[in-house]
Length: 317
Image (cartoon, rainbow, N blue to C red; front, side, top):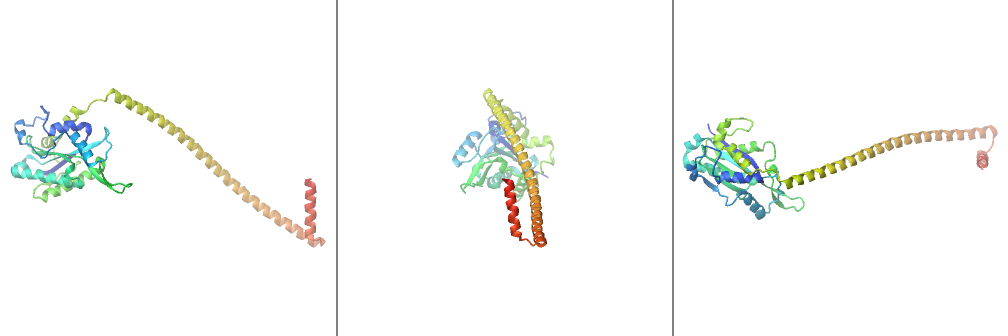
């Protein structure tokens, strides 16, 4: 049984040139020996890119006001490689093969509300061991801005593929879409299950060769100026980290001081409560002494209290 195969790869800006050259057949020589140049005239585009992928993304960002802070680490494009095995395509014939890729294209345009506008290129290769489509798109998501309350669109690969099961959901949806339109295929297995040998997968998708060309033609070593900038930023980061450590140390000491004061305050409260109890006991004792004096000597209590107060004041002077 044949499988409905869809595979994704994410690309940074520096890798787009090599990807563009391979997909659009702009190279003179190819590392993939399976490419039959005499059949390259049978390749066709469901959606053609009139310029390079990099320029197309820049134009799209300006036209649709897409938000994105692009760095050397930002994934700005995704590529679906969509195919099945050679036997499947031979069994359904040329017209159904074209319909298969058109149906796959329609699936991607509608998946996760992407929109056909964000598809840069959809190129079907017929000059390799098995027909397959390279569909390159910009992972645009639409979100509600909390400040303005308006919907904004931005390039966000991590949000487009949010969730550990995002690729499983992709395969589920793609498989259902394909079989609902009359193609007798099985669902492609998850990445954890190797349903095809490595060599067979290379023959079907040519993925390893694409990856080789994309990386080897475009990745360049850092320029000296960029190295100096990175080193300067690193020194500044270390300096700020050391400041933060110092502030953190002071904060810990302040916390210790506060805890010590809390403990001392608790102790003082306990001592104060004890003194209150002793003072109350002493007052009761004095009152009882006055009452006893009154009973024994039949002497007015107030007169006795005034005499005591006078004596205390005289002694203090």
